Image 1 (cartoon, rainbow, N blue to C red):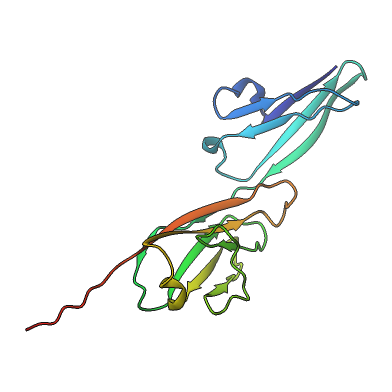
Image 2: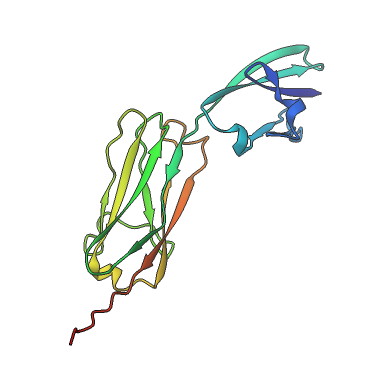
Length: 186
C-alpha cells in the first residue's frame, strides 16, 4: 500500500484538510496512485512550493519527495458603464506573473475574439514587465451599436510557465451601455 503526505512550509497539511486544504488520496490501480492537494482561496495568496512525501510499506520506500510549485497571479477586470458614441477600451490587468502570458478575449456570444477582426475590435496584448501586464480590448463603435444594454466580456489566461499544470483563469466584466438623449432647449 502507498500512503501520501502533503507538506507546506514544513507543516503537514493532511491534518489541515478541514480548513484551507483538501487532500484526495485517489485510487490505487495499475501500480499507480495519484493523490491531489486542493488549496482553497484563503491559503492560495502567494507562490508556494508543496512537497508530496511518499511512504510505501510494500516497496520499503519512505519519504520519497516530489516538489510541486503553485504559482499565484491576480486578474482585475472591472465592470464599466459606457456610451456607444466613441470606441471603448476595456483592460484586463494581471499581477504576479512568472512569465509573459497571452490573454484571450471572449465576446458576449462566448466566442473568442480574433485579432484579425479589426472591423469590430483592436486587441493589445500589452507588455510583460516585472511580473505584471495589462491587455486591452478596444470595441469599435460599429460593434458597440450591436450590443445589448448589458453585455459580458471575458479575459482568459493561464500560466505560461506551467501550461500543463495550471487551470485557465477567466474573469468577466459587464459593459452597461448608457443611453444619452439630446433634448433641444427652447
